[in-house]
Length: 158
Image (cartoon, rainbow, N blue to C red):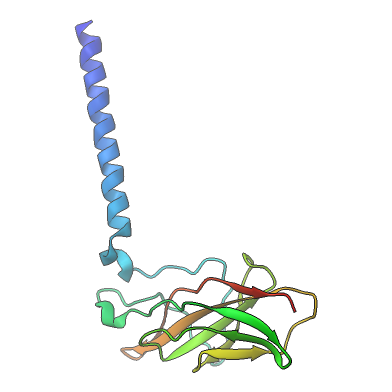
């Protein structure tokens, strides 16, 4: 009986250490100091070619908040007589934006344009087929173009 009690105590001690380890790992993964890590952008198929530099993460490793590229907010799409107008709020410190498009909200998004402003009119659409858009900000840091995280998708059915 004494061995059973010791085994149960040992089991509880191991369980406590495991839970504590998981908690500490979880806290460090969400800690703001870990935000310098480059992260892939889910659901995006990045097209490369002339004029499209390889995408980088949202910030430079080891640099402070001044090098971080903010996420674009308030993306909206509306049907106008000229086409689908996509607009978004300016991101602090952004020098440019990249616009991505998909026919599904959770689909693969392809780059449509690199822009300086906060709006775009898309004339390449089919009436009755949904179009979804995401935007990300960019800026040059130490001679390299850096990108923020993609915005939430804005969709429209023309």
